[in-house]
Amino acid sequence: MPNSLDIERPELLLAYLRETNRIDPPEKPAITVLAGGVSNRTVLVERVGGKAWVLKQALAKLRVKVDWFSDPVRIEREAAGLRHLATLAPPGTITPLVFEDPAHHLLAMQAVPQPHENWKTILLAGRLEAGHVRQFADLLAGIHRNSWLRRKELAPVFDDRGFFESLRLEPYYAYTASQVPESAAFYDRLIVETRSRRFSIVHGDYSPKNVLVHDGRLILLDHEVIHWGDPSFDLGFAMTHLLSKAHHLPAMRPRFSDAAVAFWTRYREGVGDVMWAADLEPTAVRQTLGCLLARVAGRSPLEYLSEDEKSRQRRAVIALMANPPATVRGLTDQFTETL
Ligand SMILES: Nc1ncnc2c1ncn2[C@@H]1O[C@H](COP(=O)(O)OP(=O)(O)O)[C@@H](O)[C@H]1O
Ligand SMILES: [Mg+2]
Image (cartoon, rainbow, N blue to C red; front, side):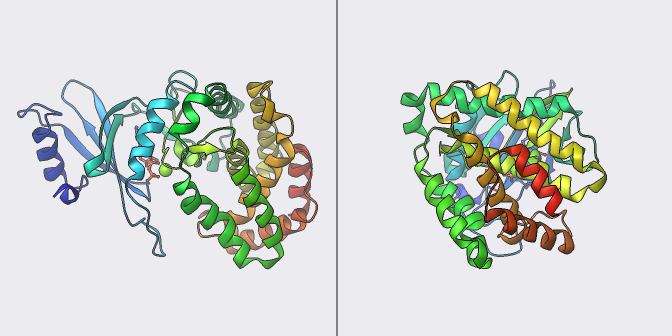
């Protein structure tokens, strides 16, 4: 019967927490269903005494317009991610894991205290802060560099790339290639390259939407696509969000472009002398182009871009794919000029 538990039903969740001795029978925590996720149920459990947990339960069918299925055993990957990232990323940036229950496809982690804001909301409101961008770079550099240094131990733990294939390479790169014939050769090469570069833990969903800001500090969430792979994917995924906002907020275009360059520069300093960073910049630029087009023509388009903005971004990126810039500064300059 394990799958009968739906944590978004407070009476079922309460019974479950009592039966599994997570809480004492008389305790009545406050239970709040959180909005925002598409591939999971997320519920805030505020316990008597002030502790608070977020329970996350993986869905088999994602909450998107088209039918999209993914095996909920991926919650186990996320739990492994939480456990290991806490030893790799800067202190305080990863929520501690409280417990894991694979049979119910769920985990519990400590809740990020209130007040907090989603970084995506902050950015779309035009509140771009250099300190946040710096932390975003340090967090990723810490994960990539430290996991590479511990590769013997960590590469086997995160070896499986099934979820990265089905939730990223197919819907973002392969599907976009099938929709935009001019991009097919570019993506074919990028997919082969991404699969062949296996240097570090890759978060796989390194987006401002998965970052909460509490007390000026960034906290990273949502680790279900984590795997051992190509660090440049995270860079391209992340810079795509900064550049799509540069596009969407014309008055802030230079500032968001500079933020992408600042992010890259800080990250590059942070990873330091690792062997794979030597030729990383042009690869990161191509991942960024791949994601910039995928987010307007793939299975998971950015919801804040209008149809006009999507076609403009599509034209600009296709033009750049023919002869990609070698540097991030070259990319931001040419992308904003072409728009
Ligand atoms: N530990 C946490 N503390 C506070 N809020 C959280 C926590 N984990 C998740 N959330 C909230 O739930 C939302 C969805 O969680 P996320 O892990 O991103 O799930 P999904 O995979 O469905 O996107 C987050 O954007 C955030 O608002
Ligand atoms: Mg999320």
